[in-house]
Length: 364
Image (tube, rainbow, N blue to C red):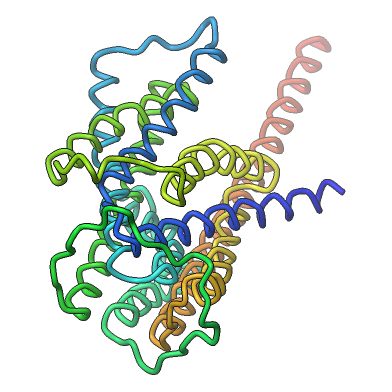
């Protein structure tokens, strides 16, 4: 039953994220401002996380220095505020399916960034190294395919779309050609992906000096809320755009702020403790499948051949890099085990020599 619970938890986690992508696309289609939505989402997440961080504060918690806070502020800007705003604009400019497909780039982009920072290495003489390079090539091919090739469309076969929505105060949207919007959206998705990758790398460094996971997450959410407010108020000053009603906009904000920030992240953390990070990363294509089906049935989006082919390439790249890393980890563990065995043998031989020497001294 424990194994079944893990698989159900993974499916639930990916379904929650797919639901957020679909709801977000629905309200953006209706005309809600992307930057205002991002601010409200982070604000709700802050309201949820900050009290939890205060309640579960450890007695011997690491004190927060000014330097550490400055690092957290910059991490929030580069790894939370900018990528979330960029990805939301990208979803508004493209499709929900593309937003879910690009998620599969995250482990590959993180590996590529770690490679550039010399935190990872690739040996082309090994099978694992060749597979990881092939995964990087497949990732680039998938992004290029998603960006520049659309191909034939699969039109939705339902005329009634449950998530079709129109903003009450829908403002006039600037006219941008569909091709230009698509290119801008894809570029913003790539920017957001590499920013999230940088966030993962830098967050690991900060946790070494400030090992307070919940407090760090709450501080990131709090500071990003202020940053997102500055972004939103600078780009949208119409008071009517900031008003919320009892509609799908409020539902999406609460859904994103509570379910994604608290429930989904905690589910993923629990799964990582049991199965490891590779298992949760390998489940990401579920989000793509659920989102693709939901975008056709609920949003009425037309799926093009380029999105399908690009998504397949991204999934292949994800599994290739994960397999290569797991293979390297297995070889590393085997090497460490062999080294430990050799060290134990040497220690035994040294102890035997000392014992014989001691017995010789007694005889003398």
